[in-house]
Structures are given as structure tokens and as C-alpha cells.
Length: 162
Image 1: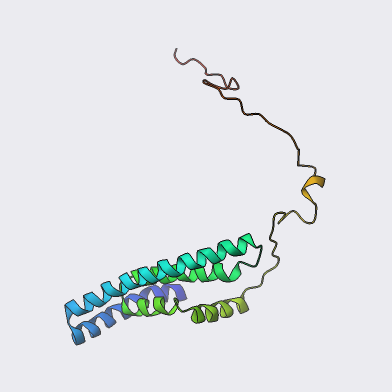
Image 2: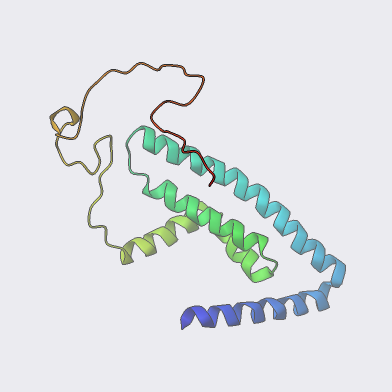
């Protein structure tokens, strides 16, 4: 029910803000502000998003906890969606989510409400403590790639027709 209320209240709030700012500044300056915030937001989201992507890749490479860069990346994505949506209120929230301190505060608030049951990471994640050589489903072998011009011979094409 609260989601429905947001979808109803948000456009009403944005329209009211457009009317207020448009009456104060005029039509063209108001439209220029909306376009400028979308352009600036796109630039900032792209820049911060690439930086977070590098942090995610680094955390995967070093087998460290990727929670923070993944959460920040998700919030930067949400920020981009809000900044591309025309409106002053959504722009304010979008720009706020581009501030790392605010993202950390949001993440801390969400972390209080989420319980992680288990977390594994590494080459044998999800396999327990059994090394790959001791598992029954691992078969070692060699192979040779044989180049072929036609079909492999494993399948046979059935003739069509009556």
C-alpha cells in the first residue's frame, strides 16, 4: 500500500514543484535546469559507476567482501534513474545518492534490517571444504581439437518430404 502511495504522491509533488519553480523563474529557465541536471547527473553517474565497477572487480580478484561496492553500485544506478526522471524532487534524491557518505548511511540503515544466513566466496564457494581433486564428480582428462569441414558425424540429418 505504501508503494501505491509513493506512485501517486511523487508525480503530484513533482508537478507542484514545476509549477512553483516555473512561476518563479519562467518556462525556459525551468526547462534548462531540468535538462542541465539530467546532463550533469549522467556525467556523474557514469564516472562514479565506473569507479564502483573497478572496486567490485578488485574485490572479486582479491576475494574480499564485495558488499560495499555492490551496494554502492546499486545506489548509483538508482541515482541515475532518478536523475534522468524529470523533476526537482527526484533530482534532489538522485544527487544525494551520489554522495558516498549518504550511500554509507543508507547501507547502514538497510544492514540493520537484513540478516545474512551464510556467505561463501572463493574458487570452491558452495562446495564446502572438499578439495576439487577429492570430489566424485571431477574427471581429469586430455582432449585434442580436430578441425572438421562438415558435420561432426554425431548427428544425422533426416531427409524431408513425403
